[in-house]
Image 1 (spheres, rainbow, N blue to C red):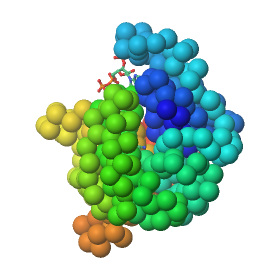
Image 2: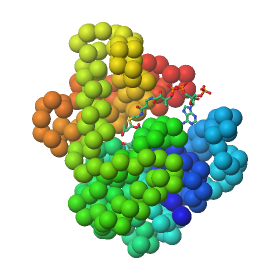
Image 3: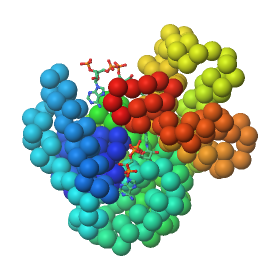
Image 4: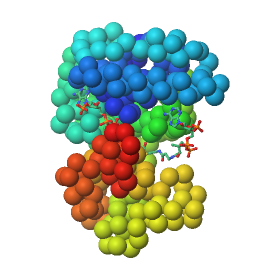
Length: 281
Ligand SMILES: CC(=O)CC(=O)SCCNC(=O)CCNC(=O)[C@H](O)C(C)(C)COP(=O)(O)OP(=O)(O)OC[C@H]1O[C@@H](n2cnc3c(N)ncnc32)[C@H](O)[C@@H]1OP(=O)(O)O
Ligand SMILES: NC(=O)C1=CN([C@@H]2O[C@H](COP(=O)(O)OP(=O)(O)OC[C@H]3O[C@@H](n4cnc5c(N)ncnc54)[C@H](OP(=O)(O)O)[C@@H]3O)[C@@H](O)[C@H]2O)C=CC1
């Protein structure tokens, strides 16, 4: 299987890694060499950790040897499937899928790892809506079991079956849903995170207390503010905007504090600061 991944950020790097662990030949693209380098070191660190714990079937060198790094979209021409994991912005994703629709071989499947953007709208932009689908991995990709599979209006049964099989070969559990704003995962998760941010804004409790209450009281592995920092506050805001616009109900209104933090460049772990401060950006 020739497996393409576009975007070497936290999600794209993880998706490329688990595809390579499954034995696929992987091509990973970002817009600049330095982002590819960053993605490569994220993969190397993760593989080293898994190897140390005896959780890798091959050596880290063999796994990363299956990944080629590129800035050229033409390198995706022969892919059987391409998963997009770039910034959560509908216009940017549509422009990319229009290009991919022209470049990737006609039999190739195009998939988006979007957290919330309508799959049907991206599928139309690609010019191949039958061979288009949502393949939504969870963060951190190497550790999380789920792939949410989202069928667009025109997604064919063959496309859905192909992606379900690919997800299983990657060691994941695929679960399917239909194309509604935020799908299932973020329609349920993100309003909780937004409400936790609203609690900070209203002075209900300090961030540490909010996280502690949800961790110890609800057995969540991470508190909602730690999780928001982990996901990226820009991505959280983009998802809330899609829910608010798409479902039209003010209960999905993004917290003004979330908006202000994104405006201030506080994006969470990836920028070094969000609700908490991190040693390395
Ligand atoms: C926004 C969207 O569209 C959708 C989403 O993805 S929403 C986000 C979904 N994800 C979550 O909700 C994650 C919630 N958090 C968790 O499940 C857990 O905290 C976790 C799985 C991330 C970490 O597990 P943990 O046991 O709580 O923490 P931690 O001890 O730090 O990690 C366990 C080990 O995994 C390792 N690890 C962490 N990330 C890793 C990675 N990417 N690769 C390999 N190993 C990794 C850690 O280094 C650690 O190793 P040691 O035990 O040797 O120190
Ligand atoms: N963060 C999360 O927990 C999850 C995120 N997602 C989704 O995955 C996608 C990626 O998110 P995430 O990895 O967190 O984001 P990141 O910001 O970590 O990474 C996005 C990457 O894509 C690059 N990029 C931007 N535009 C292009 C382009 N036109 N072509 C190629 N690469 C490009 C970015 O480069 P640059 O740095 O220059 O912007 C960056 O390296 C989003 O759609 C998000 O909603 C899905 C599940 C979980």
